[in-house]
Image 1: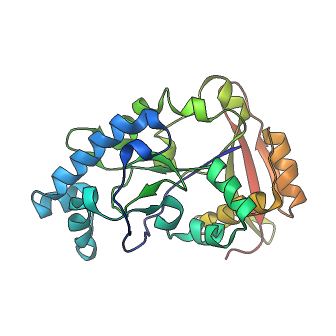
Image 2: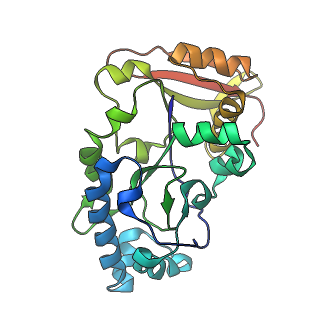
Length: 261
């Protein structure tokens, strides 16, 4: 099973130890693309601060991120799983997994990134600021840039069930194609109250984090969307098939909750 996750805007304040080694990251086929995006981002942030802040969409309170990006080549790195601190990762709780569950997380989780393309949770990267919606001088719009770079790399990693939990901006960076589509499942979180269902926005991240954690802790290894449905149901989640997959469209599963937290 390969689980595709979005990153989070919230990140660790700083890394420690040695700087990032691009040739040591997973998905080696992305090394050249990562080097190009990193160079473009650092160059931007070592120039005019106002221009960099505008390109990166930074508010006045986040202007310090420009200087942090400028020092990325020498900044201390952390395992990816420790860099992201947002709602999804808080509820995933990687730090509290036992050794076996964490090993499964290292093998199955892939976090998408505007700067790195996609990395595994054990890959060491420095905290940074660069969303997938950015248009960098040189590489251009990062969604389209990474879509080209990942076209031949990602299918090699997606050799079983693909559970796609990415937000739309990061989903644009790679879309399953060919036979991968029929074994891909996306998840929508719905809240049911007084007989009505509404799409959950902010708290869908928390629910998705808990779903992944439950699968990792249980040692569940579903191989098809149908097996995933059974696994999540068996773990106490209320899951329904909103749309069965076809040769062109992934399966869509709805997770129905009565409370959001």
